[in-house]
Picture 1 (cartoon, rainbow, N blue to C red):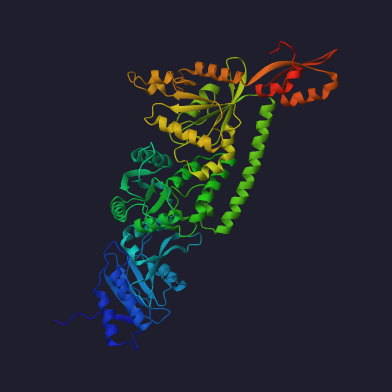
Picture 2 (tube, one colour):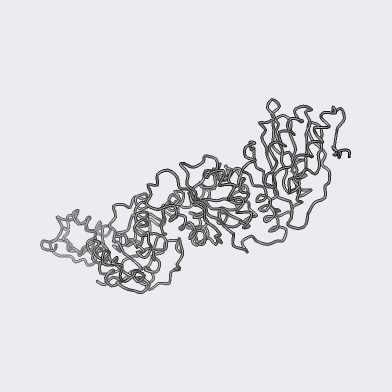
Length: 611
């Protein structure tokens, strides 16, 4: 039986028989189903291109079979119209791989037009190194949906070296593209179904953190579910150090890619902050959206922000995080994709250039500065009125909002979830000694709180700097309450509030086992009180302790200002609250409530025996 002669399409004029035979032999190659193209096939195509200085094109089906081979001139190659699946929300099932003589792997306008016209699974261009054909580079592009004008949107990846072909998992790339395409073709939203998510953590080097990797991964699960994800699996790998290209080991990348295909995973979240290159490489290799812990927390904040200031702060943090990642975002930041990691005021800016983003960052900082000035004005008025201030601080979900509600009879939003409160809330607090104070609920802290958020929320966190007392709410029912407490103190140190007086409030004691003995240990801790905000246990004691703390901050004094120093009397209105004022023969007699730190300035005017 004679061997089957495969047809070579295109411009074969002037080609020697050995070149024709080499082109026909390309049909004998088969790429693994998970691989974009096998390195052997790509090298063979590069060798032919080097020999004749013409583009070589092949079509592969999803099983990796070569369906067609074409050859053109040095600029372009004709593409046959192969049959394929092109229903709504589906790609053709065929991918196009071709060479570019001269080493430039960037896809041309003709390449991208063909990708749109035929709805190929992808379009790839191999930049051929004429001296070393085996050292090729490759770019590829996929369709990611439609824009407002019905035009297919495209995302290009590259340039990729040959070794990346071993890590890139093609079925997931195609699946993600088809999901995004179906969203826009069917005029639906991706968020209708919770994103099926897998979580990944890496334990490396000597773990000097008190949090174990398992603890941190479990907290990541809570964060992901708070953001609306459907967590399907958690993975933990141990390595001496992170891989510079993929963070985790390349073998683990392949395992995750297979799992993502089998379980129809939409999203992979890493417990550490990834570099822009690592995020891009992982997304290419896994073929699904990849975000890190920082992006996840930013997404939660974007969902929670209600006030104008909160929205500005979240957008600022998002843009600062996005700026170094603006190139090659891929599936993670597709405007049409939506979902976790892409929400919030910053999402419409993600496909703009760096200059526009920098301009936007500068504009938002200006807006936040204006809000900060208003906040300072309010604080100065409170200080003038001598209203003592108390700030609730603590780990996220420690019960701060619940405590604010029961102490001030308010109805601030509270829920058993991470970051239920984002925008600071201030209420009036009635103390047992009939005085009143200002009680502020601040955003919850978390271990490894993204530095972008600390910077963006600095004006909000500065509420703690002006507070007379910090009430540190601690969820003692949490097995890691000590580690959570230390994380709070680290953030307080970052914002410069480490020297403020702190009252430790051990909350949720109703959840402690009766025979644990922990409650007795907690009661012995100095400068602390044990309560249950939900069950309203120990609140009277808490209020008494707060009142006693604040008594030390101010005092009522009687001063006699000689008429020769009458100008000093006017300054008293700035330094404190004037309770009474009488004109005596020897001078102006005034009773004033002022901060104890201010009293020494007025010592020579104080009526003897008043203190």
